[in-house]
Image 1 (tube, helix red, strand yellow):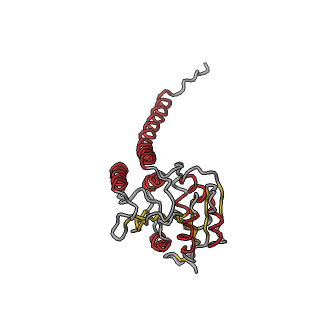
Image 2 (cartoon, one colour; image 1 turned 90 degrees about the vertical axis):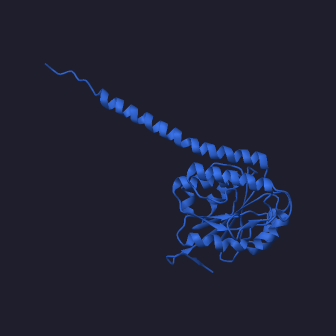
Image 3 (cartoon, rainbow, N blue to C red; image 1 turned 45 degrees about the horizontal axis):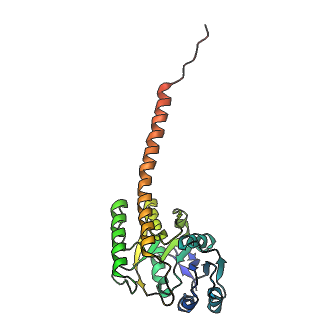
Length: 260
């Protein structure tokens, strides 16, 4: 089964899935990945609970990369670098993302958008795992990013997304943790990418405990928001300094001694 865009061109689909001790959740995800997905890239943080073996029970074609656990963001960057698809989807392995929504995520990309972001806060979306505190934090971060960067996101800290491969090359993220979703969203806006939000429903993690730490990761998200915002002032300052130096050299001119 092939996926075709609005120009009738066949597109190869890759799914990138970071894992770390998710053996009990694998059965909720991998058997349900649609057949039109051409490539599954698993970046595993050297799980010790049989995660990799469990994946092989359902998808013997999955490409598993074993890395020391360095965070979700680091795993995503590795996965993106290894993916060979024209369109690349990132999703979680804990059962919170419904593989059945992959088609809905791809539709805007196939229609010409650069990125499709899942949103729990659009009509038709929702969450079983959004505590009031996390919902408040997400709202604050969304408001900050929209006002500081001129974007119009409804959801910021949600990692179910689809990208054109060339779009990923324009947003070179460096975050190692859960803050990477916020960094992606900011860099998408800075790069002028066409982004479409798609309703998505986040289920509660099926088994095990989340690696998300509310205060630690909230601080990292704030750091990303301000770091990227302050960059433009540094760039403008550097540009003004270069223009002053160039003008100074031009005005100074060159004095030569004539032969008499």
